[in-house]
Length: 299
Image (tube, rainbow, N blue to C red):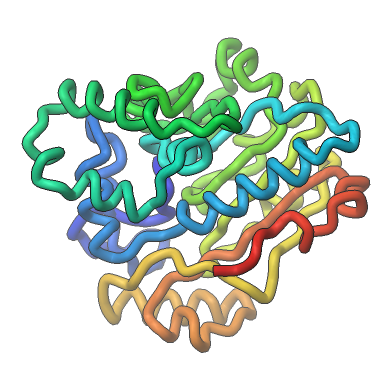
């Protein structure tokens, strides 16, 4: 699965493993991200917005605290799509800025090659002084290629670790990883997509994942536990993901959340998918860096 969404194919409602969800699969591997922002912007997709503040604050608090911890190393963004998390982490832009940019008439008039040139300059002018190295991993080769071409990813790989082991180049590029991020696609992942980066890492690695409340993260948490990481779930606060496309999706989501023994009131019942943030770390880090200290003030 590709991208920062867990579900969808544009305009098509379908049953997937018994789930009634709108799918947007055809926006995830285009030559550039304009269709992605058009389609998901119409449903107020916002997970990268929440992740921007949290990942940045987490990196500053954990790896930049001045108390002797190792340097920031690299971020590995799994299901990186068009490099949206890297764009928000390393540049003075917001998700709203990206929706405005890629929905504008001037950008719509460009071909992909022209857009890449324009985006390269646009992001370079907004690059933060505290930018960190980001490696992207996604099965969508076109999306990864775009993110690399415009300078959002320092390295990018179109590989599916659910079906094949990582390439030697991917392992080499991710050896300095300190933080693994996931803002969508967790329901398509298993521990095998994380294991190589944890067993081959030069320093301790954290895993931060935004996961839809309609499914369980337990299998991944158990797999990470076997590799020495303790998983904590941020709560009770959750994060809106996007509006439902209709009543069918909402019924599915409410039923699925109830099946997970969660309360949909004021969240899925109010018209939005919601995610929960799961953070997996070595046991000693859960004491040294309490969860509350790693999270910025809520929106």
